[in-house]
Length: 315
Image (tube, rainbow, N blue to C red):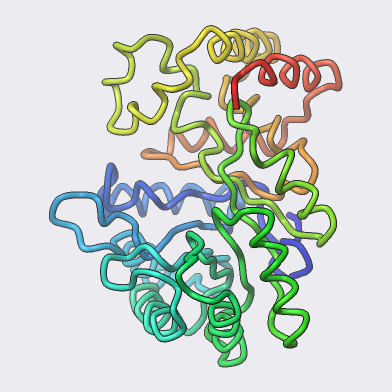
């Protein structure tokens, strides 16, 4: 377990992604995955108020509802760290103060909770003064509805600006960032955001930790992309450079008698500031493949080999 930045949130070093709940996994299947995750010591669940509005017939908030129902039925709310987000729900678009307040109340109702542990601005909203948004998040912290603030998909410049506004006004400071970051997608995180993370003691909770499944090794040809509803998101990595990374991961996995995904997640956990990569699972068996990464420590030469190969992938 490790703390998220300067917060008191003590989390398992793997965040369970809730983006598939209500999308590729129904409520019963989601609860089975959640049960398996907590049985293995997991306590950090990541979701958003917009998951999964893109599915025909859904409205957004389905993932939060499943998680809320599960926590209520298990009576485990106090032992679960819930991270959710605002700005993309069809009914709560953007980061105006009134919208943030209303969206937070809607999330709390779906989660059947009186607080959100880690509340992220999901995407920056350049149409709203950052002072207004930072103030709205602070109001939620003061009201006890949110414990800690996070920023997802924000540029280094805007993260720095938010922190400056928070310090100047005595607002709650962000404690975590959630960037798109993995072994085959290292920029712009490493060159732009990582220095801001280091300077401000922020925790990093990367999403697409397995590159939408590419870093499991199941997509090696264009025909493989049809294996999953998320396969299309891996198409950009089917290059000579991307497949060279997969080959190296497979070699390391075979030598360690483990799986490709574990090596890819262990690489992320070796990066400065990374507290808990986000990975999703549709079944408890898939989850087993991910959990072992939290106990896997790569050697210096293994990390360097992966660094070298992944650096060849165009940003």
